[in-house]
Image (cartoon, rainbow, N blue to C red; front, side):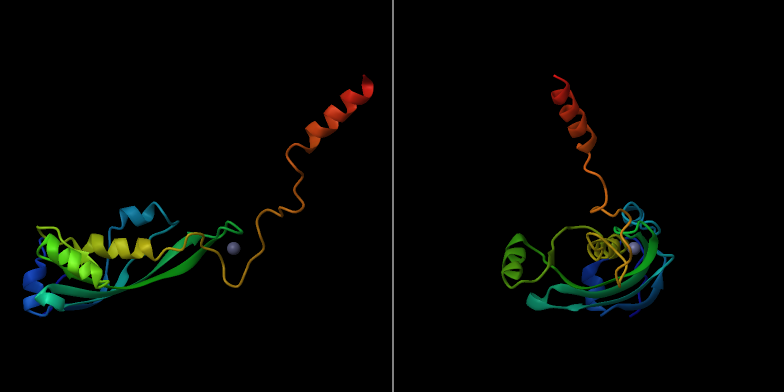
Length: 166
Ligand SMILES: [Zn+2]
């Protein structure tokens, strides 16, 4: 069964039962991502596959790819950066399942109510952002730190002169 990942009130149980899947481009609002980059993607490519995973729990396996514009942390110039993420999430039905699945190293979700798939995709894109994005291969640094004068260099000269005068 095909489904719309941007639909509201998505039910992981039903999506898993019908082995729902989606592959294609979607347009995200991405307000939280916008605060971290120069320009958010016009759209993102996603693949989402629901099925029954461990302990017969609903599971989603996702992939997302989107191009954002980041400010280079070295030269300050904006440049395109492709964010990519793959994830697997199991929808646990109890705290006990969350504990067991967590011990097995699986990412779990245990929140009653409808699923916000757009928010989940945006979370994945934010996690895929590097700490300090920069051009590859390396660009010229914006500030030549080894040539910059020490901020107290002028003061040091002043104190030295005062001492000499006395
Ligand atoms: Zn750069």
